[in-house]
Length: 151
Image (cartoon, rainbow, N blue to C red):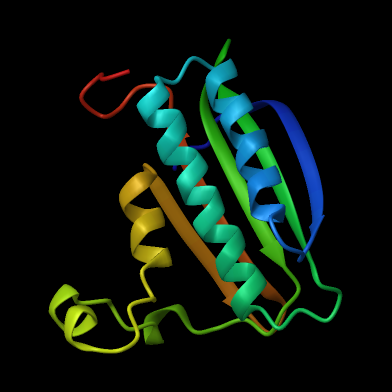
């Protein structure tokens, strides 16, 4: 991600409770629509946020049972990129030790889950994961237009 001006910012603190990922996805959808993303790109942002929140809810072992989400609208004169930071104060994990899911193994195995990080990376323009004993922060961004100029 290149350093861009942060034109606006919205912060949410959500409890780790049923359907709270939907609240986060609604905020993300509204902001993505606000900067002019196409409906398909808005849907991609929404799904990435849902996956990210569910991962935090299920894996963070966070004592305070909350997730902090910061939505940043980035651009030069007008916002053209949505940056989403999802942070938990949980136990963290070693990113390099996360096993890459393989479709063949998932189809044969009894556990079909484990696709969250891969899905986020496929849906967003950029995904960075910072994790350790301080918790985990996932920083995702998506521009209004795709790399090929698609809206």
